[in-house]
Image (cartoon, rainbow, N blue to C red):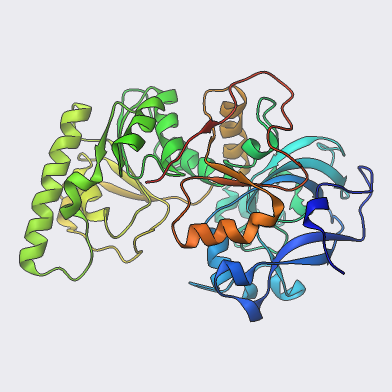
Length: 418
């Protein structure tokens, strides 16, 4: 049966009822490769909600790099993890906004018709870590829409009830779908893992990127002072607009980037460039940073460890330039610095972070919105590094700007990037 992508926003069932099938962008193991080939639209049976589960009618979905990995099947194939072996297919998408459509047994907080956004952490209700430690420590912890089958690039998606958050009323559907994965990750890194305090100094790598724009705003909201590293003066102007005290164009210190395998002479030159960079950071902040916000990895990590003040913290959630980190550990132990790992966020952190969006203290930053037919193209743009910021996909919404039910500033629309 051919699927008319122009009709995806139309459904013929009422809240509480599910159709038999839905349109979905699907990845299958036998066609893993570039997103333009791996993603294909299929007609898929709509799942029923189990205990403590909810079916959401997706109005808009957010695009993240994790489903470029899912398409490629690299660095590991998602098809062997989570519930993929049971169903044999992958529907990507780890950010969504939409309506609660049907609830499973035991769900009491949500009802059909509620407007929600979805955070992407799942864990089994039966894991003891969920009840008293942290769901992020649970053996069953998975990222929905990446390590699970039912993501947001479909007319309907299946989630755990604990993943739901009230949709901020001043945001459109596409704005509300744009921020969850990156923003909630940044929130946990700074607020929970580093206990960010007013007056502290923070260095943010990639400050105009998906994570950085939220790290910058969180620092401003907390009364902390931050300097952002960016790739152009135009992006520097954006991070200053978001609350940074200043920015550094990384092109001025290109020699500080670790490539791996440097000769002794090259490493000496790299260290000298890092030292000059560190001096610039301290001059701009008035002292060395208490916290360095890391997600770049191999290229920047030696500089991060060197630059952070004694007893300071380098918090890291990713390694976009490489995950094998090579740095001079003497600057770590002799200055009693800390390296702190962080991964997404739990439901409580997502709730508290979302309240800052609702109040307007933090704003999403959105580059482009595409129709449902643009899912494969959006991920191909990310693979080829031709995107200029966060992309949202319209699913149930048939045009931009729908879904606002209150006055407010909405998202910032800008070209961004590290």
